[in-house]
Length: 318
Image 1: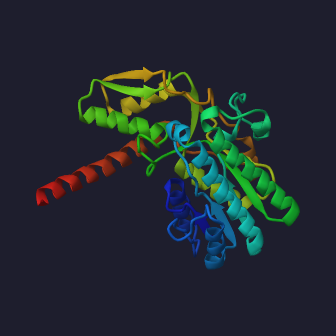
Image 2 (image 1 turned 90 degrees about the horizontal axis):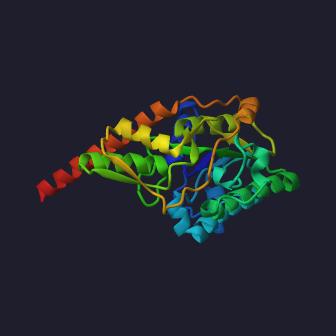
Image 3 (image 1 turned 180 degrees about the vertical axis):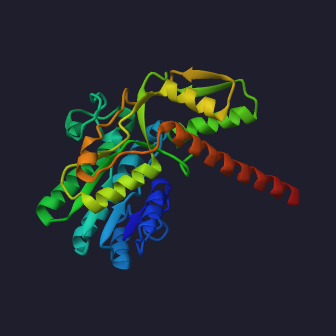
């Protein structure tokens, strides 16, 4: 079995769960050895790993800011990786199942909530995320075409916005939850009177704990084998302004939140329909947002403490 991106945020949860379920051999390719944006990298991966199942999680991802700064890169790298993984699966010929993970950014900007899988083609994605979302959606079409023409058994899953321990906390490239956690923790430590948050807070998002997403991916790999895409989500929507309040309170920050309305909000609303995932492979998200946020904050606090202690030790030793 191969898990591309298996050393990353979501991939680490998937690999751990596969190990807990007794998966004997899990091959996790690294970019320095297998550059999947190049055909040769994908060819070599299939030759070396000889997988029967491949879960494709490797992706070029980031928050709104990263998408705005790198639309061409985000389109190219995601499109190239997926293109090569699918085509080389056909040429390899020994793959029993291919599991692809897409993105809610593929849905049209003004999709009525909850987002049903059939809504994917009812309009254009939100502009800041469109290159990334369209690349991922094009790969859904490719998987469906290869199933029809070549019999390649590929499935396609669409997770809600992910969060959890191990997320990307970089303020330039990370998503909303890790960015908020870091901003509030640093502001609290440094006694800053205000924290600036992007947008107006009047848009909504839906969040899925990464461990739940990993469970959904593995359940789909085991039980689902149809052509249509399937959402993986909690089915619960929250205003970004309410999310900010919850994170601020959990961190214990007492200062003021300043909204920077010159920054983009992104898609107006997000909430995915979850019925198909339950009907097809029994998936229901388990982690409540509040407890998931607490676990994520504690993880980041621990990592931050260790990093700070290491820096202090290094300075003293010099």
